[in-house]
Amino acid sequence: MSRESHDHNFKNLILDYPREAIAFFAAAEARAIDAEVRILPIREEQLKERLGERFRELDVPLLAEWPDGRRAALLFVFEEEPNPERRLKYADFIDIYAMLSETEQQAYRHRYPQEATAMMRFSERFIEQGRQEEARRLLGKQIQLKFGELPDWAEQRLTQADHAVLEDWSAAILSADSLEALLRQH
Image (cartoon, rainbow, N blue to C red; front, side):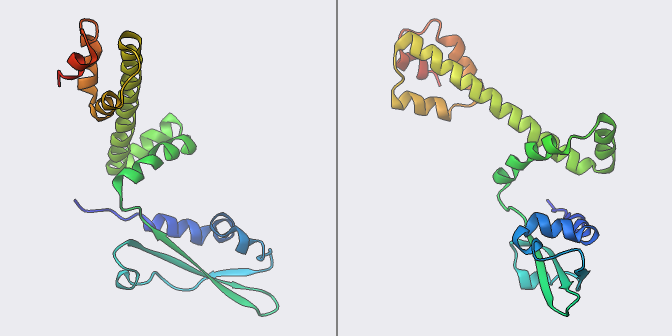
């Protein structure tokens, strides 16, 4: 599966809003850059061979020039999170803080169908994880009420069980004679 790079979007944001980007990404450095400082892009991105495989081809060097002749370079380097599981945690963050109207959401889905599909899969996965956690929590409560304190081995079984197994156990607990008999079913 080919990975589409969106680094140009970040680059354009930094180039279009350099002061804001510096304030956001480099707050300590931003305090030294007043309104009289001129900020200019220096050059294009470094070659990927130089950055290595873990970087996604984006660096944005900016030159800050003070009226008294002082100069400083700032370099923004963005690294993509290689672990897809860790990337998932940002899906809700983006969804919540973007706060797109329905019209904007439709426009996004139309312009970026691949990304919209990926975000939908992330959302569906988060919803499924929430359902599974809730099913696990409720079954744990039922087991505790019927059989007493949940032993470590049983808690481990609950943690490893998928949603379908948890549903089966939730129904079977009504007729189960013991915790062992209940959790032996799968």
